[in-house]
Each structure stands twice: as structure tokens, then as C-alpha cells.
Length: 132
Image (tube, rainbow, N blue to C red; front, side):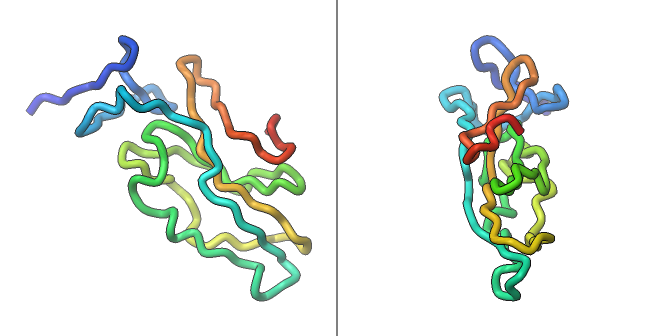
């Protein structure tokens, strides 16, 4: 069985490690868009708000294949977790439950970033954390 590599603008679509991404249908008419996938708040002082369930974002078809993701806290501009988005659109390594380690109200963003042809990652606006 031969494998197909889809081309966009004459280039093979690859992940952040330079590996070609195999797709069952051509993603050529779609372009990765940096975006905030989900927003939530947590507070380590509160038993009810200390943890947050992220299981709804744990499956396939969540993000752009070949992109990257991060879980960003916008109060201190701290990246709690990050990873790649696999060929099925799954956020690899995303924790199912997020637990706050700090004793303040924090605003969290689950973000999708897009890798350009030079390897640079482009993130969506991040509430003052755009240089992180």
C-alpha cells in the first residue's frame, strides 16, 4: 500500500519535528489558524474551583494536525502544559484534569498555535501574554 503526502503551495505538510503528516483527505483548502480553544478560571484557595475537567478536549478532531497546543495562565503568563497536535487532531499530553497550584483566581487559556514554514509558532492573542 502506498502512502500519499498532501501538498499545500507545493510543500509537503509536516509536523514540528519535520515528519510528513498523512491524512485521509486533503487539508489543502484549510489553513491552521491560531485560536483560543477554551477558557476557564481556577482558584487554588477554593475546593470547588481548584480543579477543572479538560476531558472534553482529550479526543480526536480537537486541533489542527501538525499544530501545537499550550495551557496558559494569563495572570502570570505561565505555561502549565504544552504539546503537539497529532495527525488525528488530538492534543497529545493534555491533562484530563487541571489542578491549580496557586492560591489566587487564575484565568486559563487552552490555545492552538500554528507552526510556519520556518518552524516559528504563532499563537492567538493571549490577554497580555503575547510574548510567552
